[in-house]
Length: 428
Image (cartoon, rainbow, N blue to C red; front, side, top):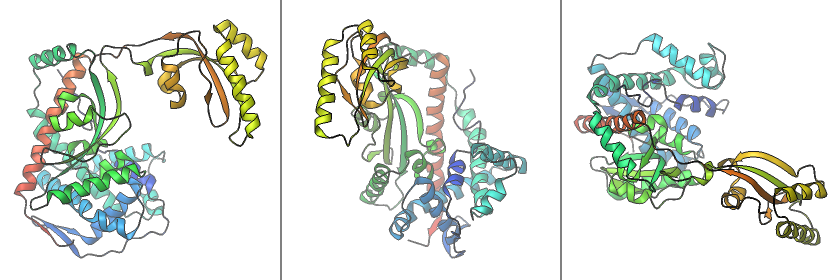
């Protein structure tokens, strides 16, 4: 069975697309300081390299560009650069190279993702004062490492039919349990690094995200696990597919939240729970409803007397209208062009203030009045079609198992490279 792994089809990640859109500071030219920041085996990372990457991280992650932010990011960014240098060294040791054709194809992907005309890659970088050589170096290492993974690690991933059968049987017995759509950020412990310092570093990243930084962009810049290539995305999983330390936290989280730092697997994790679905049971957010509404305009600046009148009328409609025919009659009586038949919609597509009350609203019963920024709404569900959360197919299970095994192999590979490397860090 052919397994289709994330990111191996397109070695270039979304990182460059984000970066090109993020650098919008005309005239921001970085000083070319060639001081050595670190030596990795016999390869140099200069202060110029480090400064450029810090600028990239700030812009793409949406962080405030302040001296404090730059100082705080310095260690995190330098460790990412060290990992990239190790990946480059390993690829060259294996005799793997990146052709000019592959780089040109990567440029075309960047152009397409940024709605740029073909051939505009270099011009766009110049216009934004982004040094093209640095961007191409990062791009080349990403392509190189993806080829290493494909050549060395993918052949080691062999998912048997028995393993797929066992996983399907486990899932079949999991009706009523949750599947979770999760992203992660992983920071491994460095030799000689205090646990308290690594935890504090992870907590600062969590704080940045809660203050508005994009989780996926932060993961691309700072996470040092394989999922960083995919903005931290590890896909749909069940809690028992993670280590107990991670699974126990995951099942307590609310959708849309970020975990506190979790100590596991020789480092610290942050989890982002993006969605949750119960296997084999109806998911109310997936239900499609035929919806009608009565809308009573009411701006937030309305005087108290006007608010009271609107609320009284909305309460009377809610209590007095029974059934969809009566709702149609009331819509005509209200005579507001914004009232009427909204057609069939999916509950999960509605704003949260409406989706919650409508998820369990009985067909033919008017909702309680719901206040929005501009009006008071009374809804009625005239038809409901629920859906059942589908169990994954055999191919999906095989791919998930294969991706998990590949990620584990890649983590070990990176860990061993770090342990065997000679790294001399010269800036703090």
